[in-house]
Amino acid sequence: MSYTYKCTTCNSEFNSSFIENNFHYLCPKCGAAEKNLPLVGVLQVEYDYVSISKHISPNDFWNMESGKFGLYPKLWPVKFDTFNKNILDKLTLPTDNIINQTINGNSVLIMDETRNPTLSYKDRASSLVALKAIELGIDRIAAASTGNAGSSLAGICARLGLKSHIYVPKNIPDAKRIQIEAYGANIVVVDGDYDFAFDKCLEDSRINNWYNRNTAYNPLTIEGKKSAAYDIFIQTKGNIPDVIFVPVGDGVIIAGIFKGFTELLKLGWINKLPQLIAVQSNKSDAVVNYLSSNKFVYKPATTIADSISAGAPRNLYMAANAVNQSGGFGISVSDDNILQSQKEFIIKTGILCEPSSAATYAAYKQLINENKLLDKSVLLLITGNGLKDIESLKR
Image (tube, rainbow, N blue to C red; front, side, top):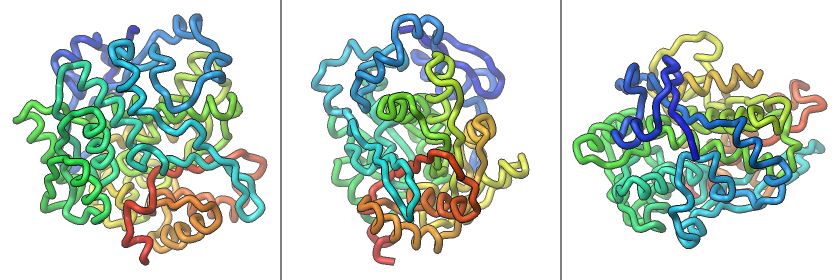
């Protein structure tokens, strides 16, 4: 296994041992994590794709089970051979979570992440971060979260015997707070929003020498979230969809998925990237606004879709690059539309999604009505279970 870390801002490249042994999260040359601003100097893991492609083929992948990272260890920055099977089995994701559904006469693929270990997409990042912490000899991990990343880290840590410290905003849904507490995490409810929790978590992690899982700040969160691209590749036998709708808050999921598909392109296993559509609430639309103006202006996020609520998307620049390079675009929908779409989606599919996931369905319906998806295969990414936000279901 050979990999390096490359800065997405200044393009400097670093030896993996230098970054990991010195606990650098952002670029040592230009990295900056300032309050209410996107991160600068986010690091990205790079591999020798030419060499890897000589040792593994698409057919090898198609004979694998999806949801098991350890089956292709050369594409991860973790020494999988140092972990016993029992540990890796605890982190296995569903192997058949892509469903072909017909909605209002239109065929659409749905990637159902509501069946993951802690019921959200965030398990993909938390699993990889937890394995790296064990590899580095660390048993305490901290994260800021609107709910799903926190409950994910708390649950994964509970499975692996690690201690978690979770920082959440005061308006976190009760169901997510209770889930975090039930896993035995140390939960810190800050008197502020997610952006405040993010900064407080960074500060306390530095003081206490905890490993930090904050989204995008830790480059392994992007790596973990790229895994969905590989799972899509495996489950569709390489027939990846033309368009993927992605709910966007901090921007790490869409950046991770883009990285995964870009790696498949570098390996020569696909000949084009899927078009990535960034979906946000119009009450938390910093990424959509940046895509249209190329400027970031901070404003507090107030959406009921808490999982995509971020006034200062920390991975803004990578998210925007993912959309632009894939030929995609951003779209925002109203909270009322999200709630209406949540109810409709659940009834039509039987998948109990939370509001952030319903946003992708709301955006999909809008583009269908505008005839912008003609002759295109589509996948909707459903990232969280509706039981995580009972109040939205009540509404």
